[in-house]
Length: 297
View 1 (tube, rainbow, N blue to C red):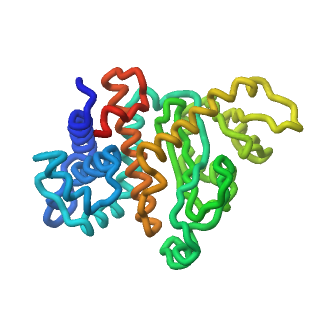
View 2: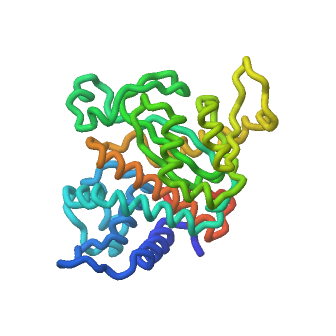
View 3: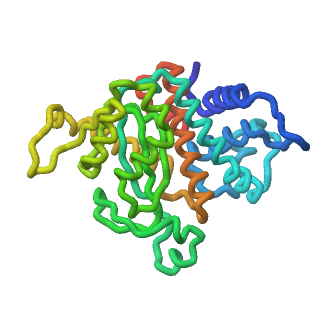
């Protein structure tokens, strides 16, 4: 099987269409099906077209015949925002369809999702209340927006994720995310989670130990080094590499969302694109699991 964009989109559309099954909702069926909508969203993210209006104009030239019925920009935006629960479900089940899903090691980290720059824009934004000011230590800067809390495998396959206010303690967010998806832990006895220094907490350690999970993180300079911590540096670079893929190749920080539903939909769109690329790369036996090079043109 070839590794190009058309092959990926065809395989993804067939998988989603089979996964969703026949439509059972009353009323006239939409001209653009849910499977086509999600495939269209993945193609937009992989081709790095941030403007939805420009993307809909580009499709007949870039993917001729692939999507015979296209909505207007407002309709596409509304459908995508309304499909957030479906996006979450497809990300989870598509990831579970790979052999990487059962990996006994998880990486966890949070990264800024900036939503505004100027103070007037932050005040007028529909995200006021949900978003706020936070500090990004890796870039030594403040930002206004949300934080993406991502749990993934060392290969970058998303396990679960959440968007949260940047002032919320990332340790508390991690426990809330794991409580929401408690079955993920019960299905993985002996799980190892690797995090950074910001996840140092006796409460978090007790929470994870009670569930049979081990947390490994770098030690502070004034604390004794735990077994295995000396080997963390190259592993910790993996989660930074995943964040770099989301921000550098999938333009996570240039999402363009102006409401909580809009930002959530665009983040989910990029996570689905990443999951689809990993799923297809594993199915075709590619040496680099998270490579997007074959699909970005």
